[in-house]
Image 1: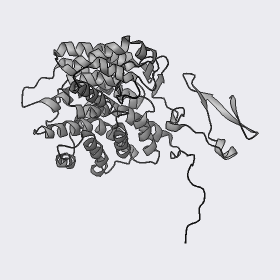
Image 2: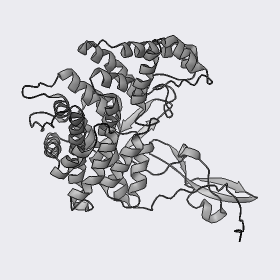
Image 3: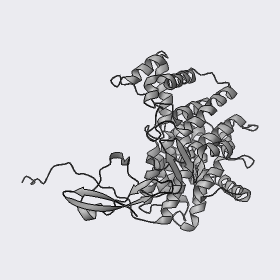
Image 4: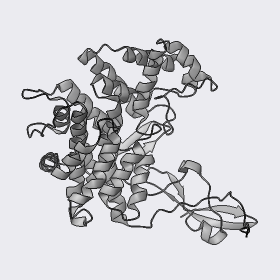
Length: 418
């Protein structure tokens, strides 16, 4: 094993250096504070590896995203969301029998305890759906006495996959003055979601174009390594908090506009442009001026430096879905013009401010009729298998409770006035 050397005040410290399976280099600084009393300083943990993981690999320079070794392009083109979820949680793709059993278990868990249904009914119709979903998931522990038992981990994972659909659709229907719809054994995961959202009595047929679009959207959001919400799930789980509590915390972390709420922020930006006359060219010029106060949402990415592979997948799907649905929407027209300028204008091209996954997912969800305040819930449904996989991975390994350090910048000792 090679080592890295750090010199502090004339003293030299050797730190172990190791490599991951994709030749990523890591410097193990665990012994640094004990030997030198010094800690590293990395605001936002942008250059800190908080764990080792075998779930997802990202190369931001090359635009690579793989889950368990499989390229996101191949998964989006050939897999179902439930097959990807099984892969995330179990490490390998399922055979036909394994997939059937997995999907049957999830379908069974689309039925929630009556207490959860009653809880959802108590929320005001003005509540943000993310607050409802986060609260309901935290409450699951109250209805399953084995919530903290290792023997129930697989069952609880499947419950999360099924229950989140039921909670989300039941609350949406409540806001529309409609009663919840029970799941349909003849439908798959995405088909059930659409029926439970939109059915108005018997005879509802799930549009194939919507089911295919939703399947792809959920797949491209299934995991993204140590982002804010996934790191939150691991942080909470490191205290040995149970699965439901950890996932509820992840939902809350996802809520923010800098994370899962970004696709909602895209539509809100488009609405703002429309409300101000629809002058998208002026808005793009304002985006170049840091003093303008206008923020361009859904462009560029913190990790991907050249292109977001998920956005590439959704860009192709976006044109197809809009064409299949025959949607006419002035906001979507504005979005397509913003996309065109960003891909052609030297200012945006030079800075890699390309439309990202949030931009295209927001457009597609709007075209599908998903309410704007449900966009982040859709993200949470898609990210659920990734959160569960990371919690299971960490739980299986054990380890210390997460406890970052800080650099204190406050007052020195002061005598209390008496």
